Amino acid sequence: MLMRTDPFRELDRMAQQLMGPGTWSKPSVMPMDAYREGDEYVVAFDVPGVTADAIDIDVERNMLTVKAERRPTAKVDNVKMELSERPLGVFSRQIMLADTLDTEHIQADYDAGVLTLRIPIAERAKPRKVSIGAGSGRREISG
Picture (tube, rainbow, N blue to C red):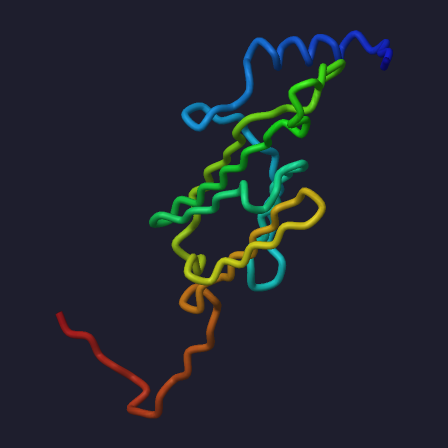
């Protein structure tokens, strides 16, 4: 049997039990990091203990939605859980993406409990040089 002495952990565990696990209609929030790396935005979500087939990624217009479900690991009827601190249920996060991102070419990788999305910056949003054509060079505007 495991013994624990941290009273704050016990309070956190009780608060989690009172709030209950996330459901599809009311999911829990999943932590994330977002940053720019070169010509793409990278968003990393912590979803430890979730299999890749239990993760849904949707983009509708500019709304990115990530949902994941962590199921209990003990699947045998004669198991008596002694301690359960790892949250179960549904976790979700929604992010409004800027128009300058190319949502058609999002790449998703899942490794070591971290879902990483790479969203390229659209070509139309990248800085570009505008050349000046040969011509009279001066225009007069009358009004």
